[in-house]
Image (tube, rainbow, N blue to C red; front, side):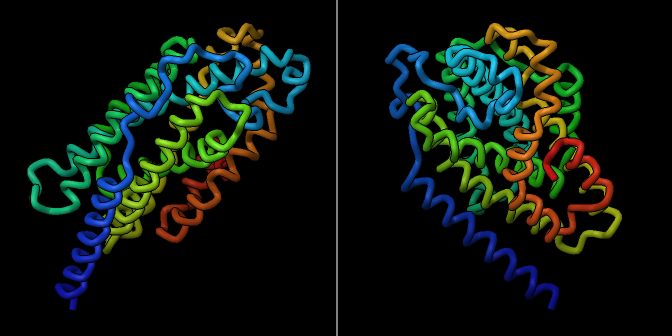
Length: 301
C-alpha cells in the first residue's frame, strides 16, 4: 500500500509540474519589453497604495504634505523591491541545491529551472524599478544578511519551501492592492502585475513541495521546522522596509521609526495579508506554540 501511495503522490506532483510548465509557456512576461522604462518618473504618483505605508494613520503621516507622503511610499516600494531581490537570491540557491543531480527529464526538475529563470527576471525588474524610483540600494541589517547566508546553506525540505511561501504570499497580497491602485505610478503597477501573475505559479509549487516533504515526518521534525520557518519569516517581513527610507524621503528617522513601530493600522494590514498563509501552515502542522509566538512578534498573527 505504501508503494502505491508513493506512486500516486509522484504522479500528482508530476501533473502539477507539467501544468505549471504549460501555464508558464502560455502566460509569462518579459519585463524589459512590458515595463515602461523610458518615461521619466512622475512624482505625482505613489510607489505603493498609501494604506500600505508604515506611517499611514499615524500623527506623522497627518502632518506630512502630499508630496512627502508620495516620496515616502516611493522609497518604501523600492525597499520592498530590494528585500525581494535579497530573498529571491536565497530562494534560487535553495532550489538549485534541492534539485542538484536529480532527474532532468522530471517535470518538477524542469519547473524548478523555469522558476529560477522567472526569479532572475524578477530581480532585474525590481532592481530597475528601484533605480527608476530614485532610491538607493536598500539591504537588510547585517545580522539578517548573515542569517540568510546560513539559512540558504542549511535549510532543506519543508523548511526551505514553506519559508519561500511566506515571502511570496506576503508580497502577493500587497502587490495585488498596488497593481489595481490608480494612485500608484503606472510602471510600478505593471511590475506588480507581472510579479503577481508569475508568482502565483511559484506559490502553488511551494505549497505542494511543502506538503510532500512533510509526508511521514515526525512530531519533533515538525516542531523544529515550524520554528525555523517562523524565524525566517520574522527576518523577512521585518526587513521589508528599511529604516533608511525615512531619511531618504526627507523625514525625521527617529520619530518615523518610533511611530511606525507603534502603528496598529500597519500591523493589522500585515496580519490580514497572512490569514490564508497561516491557515495553510496550521493545516500542515507547522503552526506550533513556539512558532505562533514568533509570528505574533512579527505581527503576522
